Length: 222
Image (cartoon, rainbow, N blue to C red):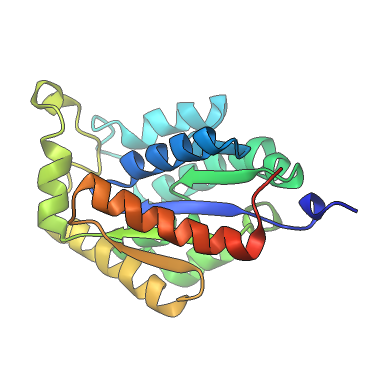
């Protein structure tokens, strides 16, 4: 039986707002495309028509009345659809999957950021539909103040369209960053922490080196 049936290559990109992860995941996808490596590039929340509708709800800054529990369950609903409709079929087909945010973002943002009990989030992630775990996670680490300044200045003409999270105060983003750092310390075998303060090219190079090490043990899809 082909190794494609057995080897999983599910890679997630995590980081606070303005960490540069979305730029880097696109650059990596471009590199894989150039190399002819079969892969799927997707994101959360989103990745499906239903997920994209939920994305609009959770990111819309006008939804100021949204409670932390409502936010948590909306993310979980989007993820359940995403896993069943997109991610799991791609993994089962032997494809390499790149996902911009996944379940670690829920613990970081809703757990550490919003203060929802971690055991509640763990229980939610323990449901069979949501139990999928990444094989490799890149964490783009950067000081919250620097990252938030980046996020808020991406395009000054779109300032009124900042997301609900980009509009949160600095202390929220510092809690989220601390949460990510703590999770990375707990699972050093899965997380690769990337210093996101460097140039786009420097960060791209470090991501590429880490991916090469990963594929040296897993192999690339055919």
